[in-house]
Structures are given as structure tokens and as C-alpha cells.
Image 1 (tube, rainbow, N blue to C red):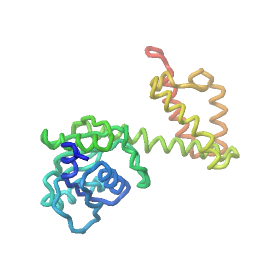
Image 2: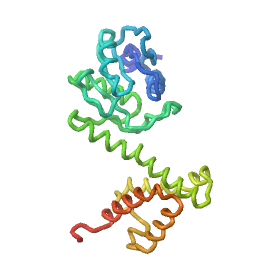
Image 3: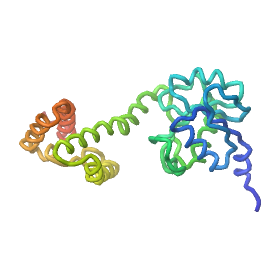
Image 4: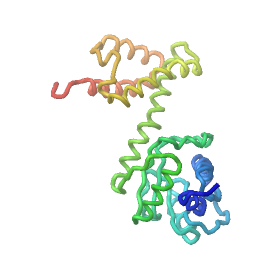
Length: 251
């Protein structure tokens, strides 16, 4: 069987993955499966081989230090941070996904990947890696990185705080935690699908969307009695939902 030029080029590209955390291990395995010659993930102080690309999968605060240590070993140096600019690297490729370290290798398929490069060649390599993983690359400028990453954090990390609050309230109402997650998951999934298809304003349902403040007051009283620590969060979320439900131009 003959090897295509693209596949041959991929197999000749050596990649050193630096950082053995949640993302580093999954990324190293996925890049290997995509046909690259991958070494690592390497931990701190381990000897690094010469490579075409070194990919830093380390905490944001350690990128500058790691970049100085790795630079001499790689032709191109990249990081996978969403918020960190390109001051210390040649390119970035940030998979827009949450990782625990136990994901199947198809976790990258169909997701977005924010890319940027200091040169056209560097950005080309970032795009090449993203596409090889099955992701959809899109460009993010350094000036917009913090805002982009904040959007990602709201959509993932901060959503979890809301889901945890829902679980706490359900538990206080007599539903076991595991059962509460099972029962609420279809509701959460449908809500996300409706948001994806129609946007938040059109997807909003429930008493606030109907203008049923009497029901909201009963909900608030239950939370005040059962889980009072959640009352400020509930009030803030209700205020935000009211603003979302209010037609533009209404006082």
C-alpha cells in the first residue's frame, strides 16, 4: 500500500508534548493516532529530544519558564492555552473543550480550536495540528484572548456552579444527588440544544419567561429556607433572566 504525501509528511513530523496533566496525555495519544511521531508527555526536568514541534501543555503561569527551557530543542514552539498571548511561543492551538484526562481520542472530533501564530508558517502548523485532530480551527488575536477564554469559562466552569446549585436544591428537596443528576441531565441537555438552535432569548422558558412572579417568589422562599447560602446566586440569576426576557425598549 502506498503512502500519501500528506500522510508521509505527518509521520515525519516529530512532536514533543511537554506536560503530563489532563490535556497533555490525551493530546499526545490523539496526535500519535493522527499519524505524527510523538514523544512524551514529558514531566518537569525530564530530558527532551530534538523535535520539529514542542507543544507546551503546562499551566499558564509556567508557560514562560517552560518555553525558555524547551526553545533550544524544537524548531517551532507552541502552547495550548486559551488566555495566554504568544509572547514566549511561535503559535497556539487551544482545544475548545473540557478535559479530565480520561477521554477517548475522538474527544477532539468536531470541536473548535482557537489558533494563532507569530508567522504564517507557525499559524499553518497550528491549523495543521487542529485539523489532524479532527477539530475546526478558528483564529483568535492576542488582544481578544482574555475575552474569548472568559466566554469559554462561562460556558463550562461557571455553568458547573449553576448545575451544582441545582443539585443542592434538589437534594434539599429530598432527591438523592446521583438521582438528581440523572433526572436533571435531560433538561439541561434539551436546554443547551435549544440555546444552540435558537439563542438564549428564544430558548428561555419557565415562570420568569411567563411573567409568573408568584411562582418565582415561592421558589425563592424554598431556597431561603432550605439552602440560604444559594439565595444571592438565585437572585442574581433571576435578575439576569428577567433582563433576557424583557423586550428591547421596555422599561
